[in-house]
Image (cartoon, rainbow, N blue to C red; front, side, top):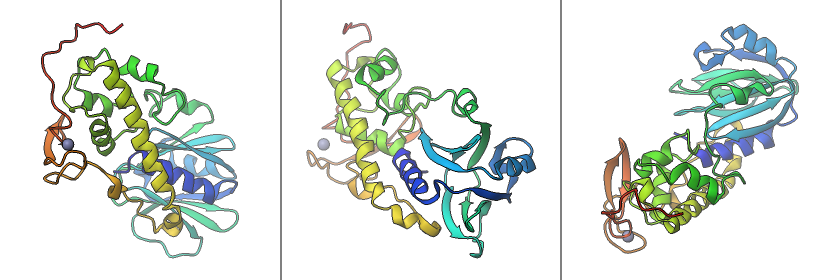
Length: 286
Ligand SMILES: [Zn+2]
């Protein structure tokens, strides 16, 4: 499952590859990918002649901003885009083709077929599903400590599932939640309201740093995306805790354990991230 840094990298890559191109025609080969409009032919017709102005990201959704419409695309498990010459042979699992007037073709491939596309008149996409209920954007300037604290601090939920909830903060997936909690030295099962201001500050910083570092690494793999070759990896070489169960913690040397929190595989160093007890939600912290 691509995480926010991967989607950010896809966004940047697509911006380099297709901004300014004009869509000549579109062919949908697997109707279930298109969630809106209901009429697939309508989707194809509306996109004819549209110019790709830019591609933006909201959480893990890509927003293709066109002359008159916005196409919202989610890659889900294995969706990916590649730019091809129009006469390149079709690879298996190619479901949507966007042919440009210059003869090149953007192709959407998706082995699992879970990806989605929604087409909206420009401006309406933010008022409707799937973008309407999304929470704070962690790489946005608006993701200040105060904003973070406001959505997190008073809740009696465990911190990890809270961070994964897209209604509060978007786009921090399982990997980056584990990484951020490790950096901030917070046990994933701590109750959010038990976190001190200092811990919340560390966590806020850790989330931004973890995501930004990954985006930077991802940026260097941009070329691999041309012609659909790109499996944009999960940048695992720089992960400190995720996937490192039974290995020594990079900070203290003790063994990293893997457990389940909120139904998700979770990696913890119990030395660096002790599960403090005894603090209740009542203590006020102004
Ligand atoms: Zn440790």
